[in-house]
Length: 251
Image 1 (tube, helix red, strand yellow):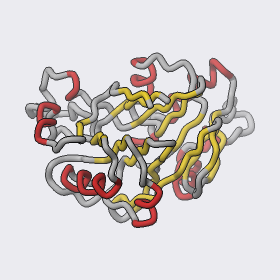
Image 2 (cartoon, rainbow, N blue to C red):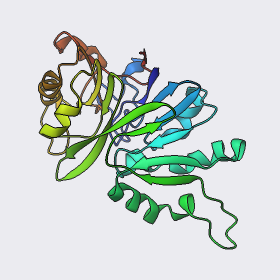
Image 3 (spheres, rainbow, N blue to C red):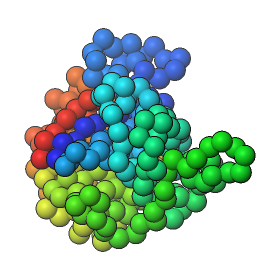
Image 4 (tube, rainbow, N blue to C red):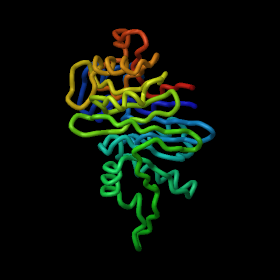
C-alpha cells in the first residue's frame, strides 16, 4: 500500500492570499501547502480521501490517471470544492466513481452538487459519483476500510483506517470508542493545525497527546497553517513529523 499526502494545508492554503509572513514568503518547498487530501494506492486501485479545492493541481502534479473511489471526511469547502475536477477522470474512463461518506456529508454534497450525483433531463450531464452512506467498516477492493467518528469543534467528521494506517484530519477530539478502533495503528496522520489552540482543530500539543493515546510509533501532523514553518519540525518529540505536500509512505 502506498500513501501520498496530496495536500497538507489548512483551508486557506499556504501561502495564504495577501500574506507576506515568513512562512508565506518562504523559499522552502515544504512550506508550500495545498488544501488537505490524501491518496491510497494498492492492487492497481487508487482511492482519494477528499476532493480538495486544489484537486486539479494535485492530480496533475502526481500524474494521477484514474480515481477508483472517493472517501469524504466531511463537507467543509476546502475538502469538497474540488469535486468537479473528477470530471476529467470520467471523460477518460466513462465510469461512475463510488464515493463513501456519512449521511450528513452526503446530504450536503448532494444538495450543493446535485449534477454530480444525478442525471437531469436535457442538462447534458451524466452522474460522476455514486453515493454510499457508511457508518461501519466496509470492504473496498479487498481492503477493510474503517470509518473513525471524530469531533470537529461543534460538528463531526470521519477519519479512516486501513490496515495499520489511519488518517484523522479536521478533528478536535477523538471519542473513546474511536480510540479503541485506532489501537494497533503504526502510521498515523493527524490534524495538528498550529502551535496555539483552536476551537475546531487539534493544535500541535493536542495532536501529540491524542497520538500518544493511540500509541502509533510514527505520527505525521497535517492540515497545517502558515503559523508553522517546516523548519520547526525539530521542536517535535521523537516519532512526530510535519507533513508536506507529496510526502509518501509504503506500508
